[in-house]
Structures are given as structure tokens and as C-alpha cells.
Figure 1 (cartoon, rainbow, N blue to C red):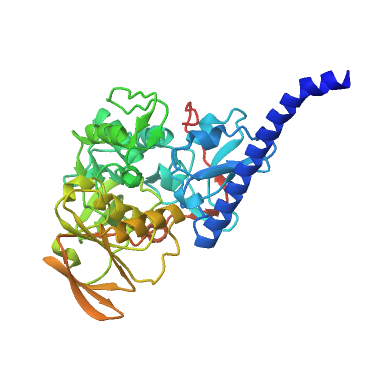
Figure 2 (figure 1 turned 120 degrees about the horizontal axis):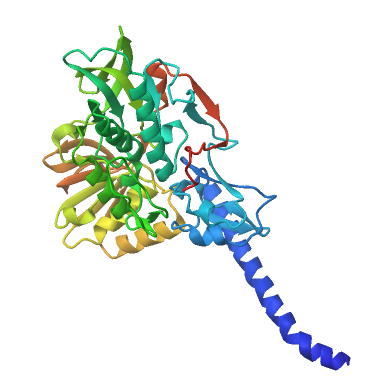
Length: 444
């Protein structure tokens, strides 16, 4: 009998042993990745990210499989954990995939707080006439940000009811930020016949522009006022950008228009742009992202027009000499993408001697590209001057001039916190604030 039982149960024991080995092997790998991320400073999320409730997580791994960015989530002690937080783009696919609803999407961590403006149920801030929507207000999911942008715009429009028409030269509504929330707000204003202007420091799309190419960032339909519903079942960055650009086509959108300040001006609001132009409006809707304004080098020649801060279509730079400036993952990834374009001479300048904040697999790809002659690497160098077709670099060996038709600067960004304080908004610091879902909207 014992022999028969052993013969029957033996194969099952082997199967379970293999499953156990695979789970433990995966957990060891995830632990190593987490330790590596902490050592390189890649563990802290930049913006919206998942928080796993250990009392509900069953360790199915569905969230890990659903994430389109590698190594953001991993398993440890049969439960999901954030592994490489800095790589999280906050699309929320993990939360949608979890069968136990164990994942909440939050801003801030115990170590790193996030500033979120204080607003009323109608999205109005502590400054009368200034409304807040989207990621800056705690609504990071694209689909919900779109809905909240619409709701906030309608609230701002409703606050104008009963007031006389705006005087000549005074807008009804100025929307600061042309991401999903801002464009949705503008479409709501357009549908209501309200005179609205969108001021966007870059191009329409907001943080979506910085997402990796081809990544799935939306898993459910999205709808804006006056636009057809866009359905997936899965939408990539490029598909969503096509939708955003189409939605913005018949709106009044000013690109390269960074708002520097908003202040009360009698019964109106005074909006000052970074170039010194002043606009007047009756209401303002702040819908900027949390990733901030790209940091600039602050060197002579940066204003010549050959400098860009975001890489959207690497193929457009094919055949050029391109200098990438920066030492983080974004800069290195951009250099690698550019090196794949035919005829492109890629150079990478970093002021440090070692890449401390670059993922190991990315560093391996960089080393291979440098060894193959596809990227020229200048460590310990800083840009001191930009001229037409050339850039001066200061380094250990003195000053050298390198050819550059285009300079791509990716040295970080300036968070919108100072801007919010300058406007006068009351801001609370949150350490793990769960996003508030827009009315009638599911998680994603």
C-alpha cells in the first residue's frame, strides 16, 4: 500500500517542488532587483504608483504580468511589492488586473511626501476663481483625469452664471496645462460656448509625451465632450496621442506658453506667461502634471532653437549629429533610441564619472553601444556653450568642441510646487494619498 501511495504521490510531490522552486527563484530575483534599485536610487516613485494591501493580496502575480514596464512590480513573500518605483508611469493596469482589488494608486510615500492643493467638492482651490483638476490635484489615471477635467470646467463655467459678459480682452477661462485633463476641460468649455484658452508649455499631451513608445497606457474606453469614444481593448501611447491631438485640433491652444504666475486683479485674474505677456481672465483651471518643467542648462546659446527637452520621434533626427545631455535613465534610453536611427551620430555628455541612477540592463546596453561605436561617451563633462552645429564641453581634459545639429537635454525637471505656492494655493503634503476617483468612473 505504501509503495502504491508513494508511486501515486511521487509525481505530485515533484510538481509541487518545482512550483515552489520557481516561486522562490522568482522572489530571490525580485529581492535582488529591489536591493539594486535602492542602491541606485531607483526605488522611489516619481508620481502616481501602486500601493498593495497585504491583507488582501494573494500573490497571484496578475499585477506583475499586467504592467507594461519591466520590474516595476515584483513578488516577495508571496505578495506583490513595488520593486523599481522610479520606472512606474502610473497607468494603473496593475490595479485593474488585481482579482482581489488589493491595489490602490497613491501619491507620495512614507519617505517622500507629495504636495496636493486643497480644493472644494467643486474643484475650486483656496484662491477664488482658480480651479484644479488632473494629476496635480490627485487624479493621475488618464481616464479619470479626463472626466475630472470636464467636471472642473463645468464647475468653473457654472460659477460664471448670472454674471455680465466678459469685457473686451478678458477671457472666460484660461486652462493651464494641455494634458488629458486640460484638453478635456477645454472641450467642455467649447461645447458650452465659453471663451477658453489652453496654455501649454510644450505640446498637447502632457505627461503622455514622456511615456515609452509603444507602451500600453489605457485599458478602457476614453471619452471627451464632442469627441467619439476611443476604445481599445488596449490603447498605446501613440493611439492616445492621436486622440489628444484630434481633440485639440479645433480648440484655442497656445503651445510653448508656460504660465509663470496667476494673481487676482480686481474681479478678474491676471495670468502672466514666462515671456512676460499678461492675459486677463475670469476663471483659471490648473491642470498641470506632476513631472514638472524640464530643467534647462542655463548656458549661452540654449535659446538658439537647436535644443529640445523631450524625445518623441527619434526617426526625425536620423542623419543628424545629436548630443544627449544627462545621466539618468531617460537620457541613456534616449541615446540608445537615437543610436538605432540610420546615419545618426550620437554623443552622450554626463557631468558625473559613473552612472549612479541608471538601471543595470540599460547600462549594459549603453556599454555595448559605446563598444560598437554607436555612441560616443563623454563622462565628467559639462556643456558651457551651444553654437549652430557645435557644442563646447568642459571636462578633465579641458574644453572640447563636438558637432551637434540637435542637443537633447534630459537633466530632470522642476516640480510645480513652487508655482502652486506662488499663486497662493493652500497645499497639503500627503504621504501615500489614495487617488479620489471621479464621479461615476471606474478605476481606469
